[in-house]
Length: 259
Image (cartoon, rainbow, N blue to C red; front, side):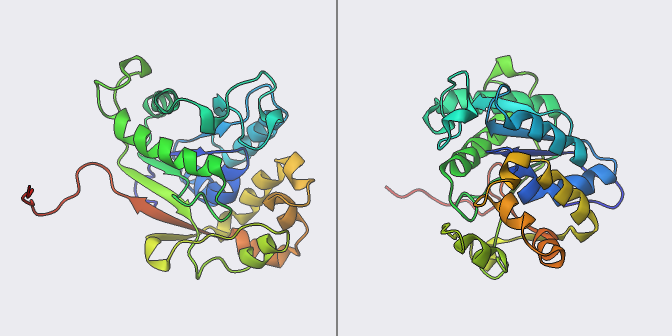
């Protein structure tokens, strides 16, 4: 996902604070270290919630700028929106896509990274909804007739979904199952890119730790990782997997439609 001569700019789009650090913290840190512009959009938890300052600290560690919030509530946590904002899963799709298009056109990234279709290992509904919104927004951002109020059109060159393969789950599987969590993984063939982010593992772990309220809880992944021995934790956070998703018309031979 990186180029040796010109580091591409990178925009992460994730459902919750901490998803950016857990799923793509190494790649974000890697691109920042290479001089690339990086940014993160977070779909849920609002600016007046207790996790917004934690997100700001994590993004500062990763060099990914200030939080960019779509302003929706977490499907499972009313405290995520003290002001009473709609849950992401209940929000009008066109509205949510338009908000994300605005961020894409403002940041103008070469690469967008988001969730996979399963919603990561636990299949959280916010993860799946964010995946759907990201697919639509990346496609719409380059079309001038869609969401003209959201800024000048911009088409990212690549879209990647952060994912976990069946063979690559490793120690994460038993760790999540130990607290009764669902375990979903993609077939190995779905993974197109595996990145060794071990040189940035310390930065990634510092960003994960910035999500203090999650580290303090026993079931969320940051808390599970915090209780592991350092070598085991480093092994888990040192690799990130992605699937490159197609953009625009697929290159293929034309087919005749048959009535």
